[in-house]
Amino acid sequence: MPTGHEHTVKAFDADIGQLRGLISQMGGLAEQAIADAMTALTRGDETLARQVRDKDKAIDAIEAEVERLAVRVIALRAPMADDLREVVAALKIAAVIERIGDYAKNIAKRVPMIHTGADRIEALSILPAMAVLASDMVRDVLDAFARRDAAAAIDVCQRDRAVDDFYNSIFRVLLTFMAENPKTISEVAHLMFVAKNLERIGDHATNVAEMVYFAATGRYLADRENDIMGDGPQGETRL
Amino acid sequence: MPTGHEHTVKAFDADIGQLRGLISQMGGLAEQAIADAMTALTRGDETLARQVRDKDKAIDAIEAEVERLAVRVIALRAPMADDLREVVAALKIAAVIERIGDYAKNIAKRVPMIHTGADRIEALSILPAMAVLASDMVRDVLDAFARRDAAAAIDVCQRDRAVDDFYNSIFRVLLTFMAENPKTISEVAHLMFVAKNLERIGDHATNVAEMVYFAATGRYLADRENDIMGDGPQGETRL
Image (cartoon, rainbow over all chains, first blue to last red; front, side, top):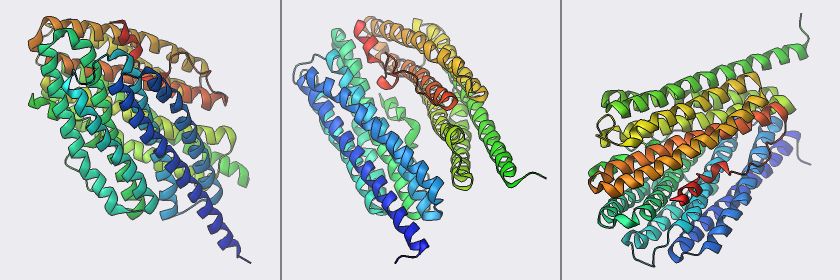
């Protein structure tokens, strides 16, 4: 027979397991949303775009479930130190994934406003590669959370630089395109926001990486040179 | 002498009071950040812009304090029903105010890239009015939280429509301006992101209003026609 303490520990482990499962499920949905939004964008597929928007509700619902479960775990089991850090991390990571889902939804919403041929605008052929980088960061940081892998979290942070470089490059390409093709300005402005959404997804994956690092080690990742919430307009100055 | 129960209730009230105080303090800093960022933008005042960026750390620090306190309250006092809703609302509202501060910081970061004369670009004279609307929403929704005023929360939600209308109008003005003045495209693109940041501040104030309504009543505001996280590109289609 387990002692009372063992019983509590097992119940807590089960709760944490459930939280991890929910977050992994949310992450899978968010990755799929990014991929589908980009497919919808490059193909001009409004039906698929509509589906991305509709499916976002599922991500929101799981976030609400994580919140309920995390609050219940904190109230009922009063976890300490490492365990408490883990539960709070789950709560915060779920909120970030919900936002990542919103960015994918926002990209999907812009599909009807972008009637570009397959590669009429150069940026349309670069954006999917940027989306893959950002989406991979989301996948890898959630794997790092599942494994409590601080080193993998650092790796994700470092990859945000590449997403920012893509963004700055696409921003410049789009400005030039606008200047040369004034009639496309409206469509291109929408593409600019799509690029910004992808850049923000990278920022948020980095944000999660910092939470994973903290949950795993109890230490903060040293303030990095590049302020992740800065929304990176610095690179845009190079225009 | 208070009974044990009374003692717990008083301790909880003190905690909630402290949470409310921190949130009110964060809200005041966020409002100031929005006002200063807009002043910096319209005057081209890079020193003030720099101050807005620096002061954002204070908002982040209070958010971290709210988080620590809220988690401690949940763990130590295991509040139920209304009280738990209130603590969770404080936790979530702090996270949203932190984001509002980030939007103000982002506007400040764009100041050096926008060297427009006082009113060379028409939108520069409209943006401050939009900022006031958005900032008033933030102030009023935090007052509503402090007073548990569900009716005031509904009022804030309804005002988001006006901010969205401003945004859509400014977006169109900026596109037209770009088309007519191709040399300004880079600066105007930055103004577009400024307008988007203000629109998002309105969305987030609405988001907080929904949390305040829920904390005060235990009911969700009916899903509103206008999906607040949708980041509103629909209006932009009217171009």
